[in-house]
Image (cartoon, rainbow, N blue to C red; front, side, top):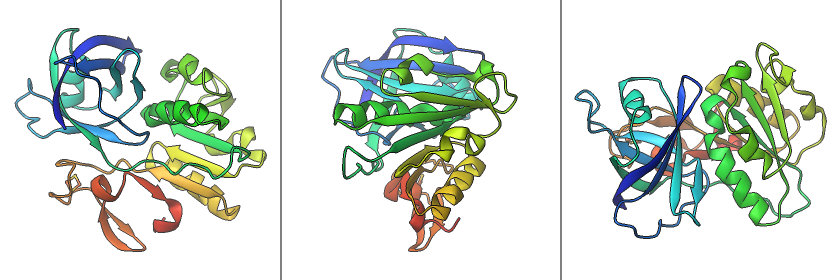
Length: 254
Ligand code: FES
């Protein structure tokens, strides 16, 4: 779909993040969206950002007919998005990409790992898992306590463990150093900076765990036309926007 959305709320989170809550401008119900999928946002107001921006789906609040996008101010385009006011219109292409693989049994021990703004898809995935009778747990990593995002929202869906690089909250260090990883898990789902995902993938490989990662390769077209998001996999070069963004680590050459 290519749809206009109205900003119903723009919640500023710390200095560098905003949570945009969007509702279809025509009042129609939201289309079905799956965890891990993303949208392409058109950033109209800025001349140098004519390409759409890929943003992961943070949450879908069907009762309120709202789609949540968590945005980190990185460049001009994302700054424009973070500055939107309630009532403004945003044009989105959605939903794009694939989804995570459901665990086979409710007994499986599941850990959802997110780093920085990479926590975004884990909120909706956690809600979805809980709704299907699974028991997700969350491991969230940030630079410091000032970067903590959506802790209370995650708490609604499972236990949350936090690590910060400077030790100002939770355990000090990277997510891969967190003591929760001494416990046995069956499945890991990961999204965050590439070095973090590579480290978690290595941890999972050593223990032969099922592990899926959400890749955040640079994207432009979002539909497999520009080839700027290509990832080298064991099956050759694939477009992350079309074949992903979710990949089992067995497919990746990390
Ligand atoms: Fe253009 Fe993937 S973003 S091919």
